[in-house]
Length: 560
Image (cartoon, one colour):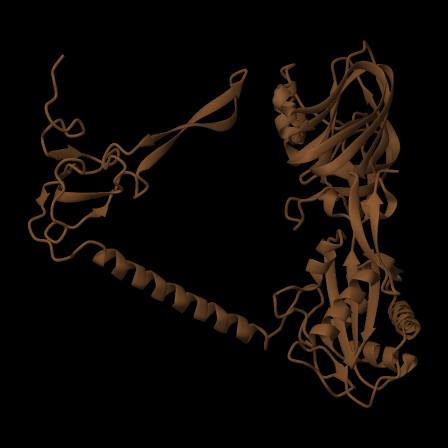
């Protein structure tokens, strides 16, 4: 074995020749360990191999049955070029000799940083000017637009009508509630006159509209977008209200009684084309409305219109399949959503509730497919389904004649991020899933729960034959990919019950899991009819409550 004399890093040469990646030029530089030069003559540059880090992270791949599963960090290696120094002193870059150095250490970096800071300032200033100009232009969508001057004679930069006058006559909560209901009646009266279907009143949307009006009054601004960039759709998302389309009309007034205020608001909106659009609703886009009124120095009104249902009719030829998207990927939500699905067909069809359009393509190509639930040779279907993003229905006409199919999908609340939902504190537990499923030999189903953090999952199952039940950490795609091979790694299992016909268990989850669900596997022979109920409950915790009289009480919250 050859003995190395002197520095082990450069093997006593004092200089090194190395490249910093595949296809990069060879670099000659002084050894950073034993041959450091005067930096006033030979400046330091950032090491191009590690980009100034001084080390590299190395990763391995963990697999189950040959399937790539996830990356796992297995170590850190010192940079082979700078030996952890983070900088090097060049003599040659490729064939070009570095003979003259005008810069001292850090000078080039400072100049570069100055240019970067200058660029950031210019970009921020440009964006600020753009946003400022937007405040004086048309804002909003879906019926929120700059309108013409209403008969009350005043509009804001957003086109929202308002009236000024003496001190408010509307002041009490009862008066505000009367204004809300009077506006609702006037809106439906106008729709009836224009042959539009009546709007349904929503207490939940009305609550959001009140919070919206309260923010306008307390922060003293009058626009669809707050100074912090928040709009009414952010309020809907915050309170778990799902929608396909949404619109908002605003109004501001002083010195009016209940009837005058309601008249002025509706008349003002009807004189503005943008605000009139969701009221007349010629496209029949909106189903529900909520009105909120909040009076302080002045009265602020918010009316929020939403569309939360889809109806259509299709014709399906014999032997053909179609896919109906229940939770479009384009929707601006990621939480779970409950939906009531009603379907009618002239003749029997097979219906599959699937996690994505990929399973529809597998069915068409006669490949292996998976599904949440299945209904065979049915003409009428009325089910409440728990949807995750991308899920849908596959309808197959297995008959000999064409059939006409009509369906309606009505969406409910978003159910994701349960740990942030006040319903858990108000009623102890909420029902996430309550249904009956049928599984054949060696079939399994997965019921998504969503984000799991500091909650209890109560599972009640009554099956005609033995099953395995798992509360798992992972999405449908992950679990299906692994379990279809007959193996579920213990890393994914949080709670389980094996080879049982009846389950009544509570799974306590104190850690945070981005996405999880309940997996049920048929271990019996033949068809297994399984009744499944899943509840989400809060962990035992304390909550401070302040009553109207100022009294503060600490409540201990426990599952009911």
